[in-house]
Image (cartoon, rainbow, N blue to C red):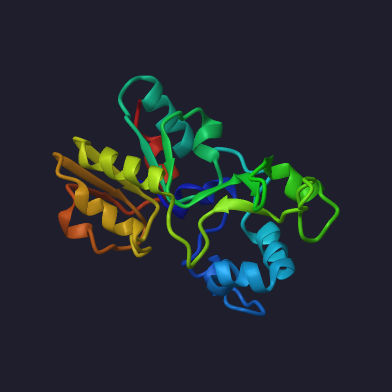
Length: 223
């Protein structure tokens, strides 16, 4: 079960640290700019912020992503549940990934539902990307914005994976994002491992805690 800290070593900033996205100065609070209401009311400004701060075209999987992919390949990892929207787990080779906040890799027309890749958002010359269908529908990223429900299928799969795991690794997340953080309560297996620089509300329930970056931890652990 991973959060933003899994991808920071790929050059993708997190949200809540001192240098994180939520502590930067913008015209509007970042939480507002990635909300459904802002997407609807100020669509051009939404896409400007989205392309500059939430999509990292050149980001590559780091050692953590590769480590989990190798564990899955070797039959030791059943699933990855991620709050991240960068698609780096799949790029590293992971197959069973539940993206509970969606992904920037997929976009779709709000009218005809035609799907578009991430590159289209940038290659399109319009400030507001539109579909080439007869309705010229607005193309939106397949990510969950503030004020929207999480994708049911991904959430159900994630909860089932956590509930049936014999060991749960929690990495790079403050466990403060609702409702994703509540899914941890479904775990009833043997061992819970936490890898996070800062303390979390789950520390007292964990069997093993690392206060290092997730990349540093996996550099020293064999598959």
